[in-house]
Image 1 (cartoon, rainbow, N blue to C red):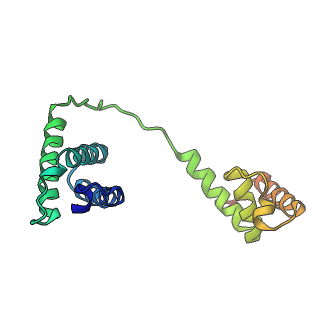
Image 2 (cartoon, one colour):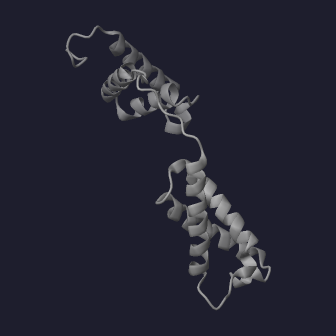
Image 3 (tube, rainbow, N blue to C red):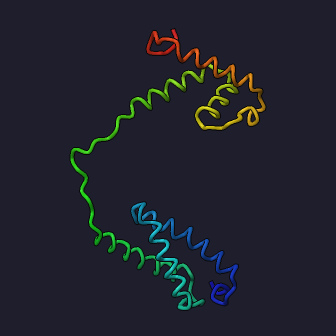
Length: 165
């Protein structure tokens, strides 16, 4: 802190990086997630404005803690002043059954393939890569045969709760 007060830019940048990490831990334990970043920014701004008040004879942690505590209280006061919106009692949530079922079936289908084939399908069809053969060091034909195999299995009628007979 003393070097930062003397105008050393590198020390100032390093100090603020360390302070930011400490403030994040401090506010995450005390504030809701949506308020943490605002509290950190307000505190960093206050530290910057009041850096000349730091006395090197005392630990930085005491000075920093008192500023953080005051900003925490300010943030709590601000949260109390903001209007909150009540959620309606009949709030509905979308049904995720189809997504869960699809993911389960896909996982079962992929388990039938060799790991390399399953990885290629995940890269191309799920994650959107264009050329899994480069990433996996495989040929296009190997990838194409994987897709054909899984397509044939997926189109077969389900005869039991487990998709295999």
